[in-house]
Length: 448
Ligand code: UDP
Image (cartoon, rainbow, N blue to C red; front, top):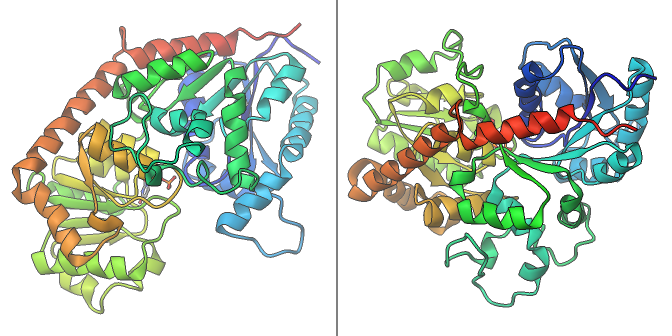
């Protein structure tokens, strides 16, 4: 078996928006590695189908479908059950496929890049004597919180004091897994193990930029071997493959072209979350009462909940689509505010295109991200009471369309956009420098 060729194992966490950014990372790094580099991408079949159907086929990526933990003949589980079955099937499902990949290609792995959640990769890499690079697909704020799990769990006050966070950080902002009653459940233990093992990674790569959270990053650097913020990945290269002006199947961009500058409300709650029916109705009633121009990414199960006749009555000034070209929309001058569930990709995309946010977080790191948006970066606000009511929605939208405060929040997010653009500047941007360090690390394999 040869060891002279680079063979990179990519281990994906197949839920939410985890696997897609890992694939983006592969696409970004490929041009800087020898042309015969092999990438083996390990992910469940469902997640592979979903992410590879949205991207052009890259010949040097070998796709492996690993077992998702569902026994043959059983119904496909959804949500938490699917995640737990998958976690139970690790790490042997990855190990088995990785062996097959080495046999099939005849090339030993030279490096493992895994989702940071999959910290058992540390042992794989150790056994193979190759580097382990952990990819944290969220922000440095949530990564830091995980590293403080023990401290947080021993805190008995409502407020929390952690470097780099605002003094309004609350226990209730914490990811539920960090404050779970027991750390033995599948997801809490996966994340706790990550927190315990991350210092073993040769590098922790983040889809963010250092200047967004300088104090937190300094603290992370004191705890981990190498912290490489290489984002925002969406604007990392000047020819942005994500912004495809020619494909506007939904007609959203053409529609936006005809709207007034900063007048449109864009609503999207990511790939997993569905809003409760009463909240869908509250939003719909406000948009219709106020005749606010909007684009709403809403799947069919949500569309069914809309008030009768809503689509017909609002068609002059609103658009509902099941999958929105989010980047193109956020980049458009007509968008005034982004109503979001605060998934990390959405937050970073809002920042990258300078759009202030109204936050309605649900789970995971979303409450923390929402706290950062409102109290640290001051680029948006959390919805009153934590969920959409008519009055809360009117008040939140009013801030952006009628009040001075809205202008300040927009100015702040535009400031952060400027810093994000600086970070990816080709000559000496911090994310570019970190990206170069990542390329070097991937190139220098520790094979004996
Ligand atoms: N997204 C999109 N169109 C939609 C909804 C979502 O392109 O209609 C993309 C969005 O741009 C982001 C991702 O899906 O990159 C959602 O990721 P995020 O981390 O925000 O949330 P998650 O899906 O993990 O909850």
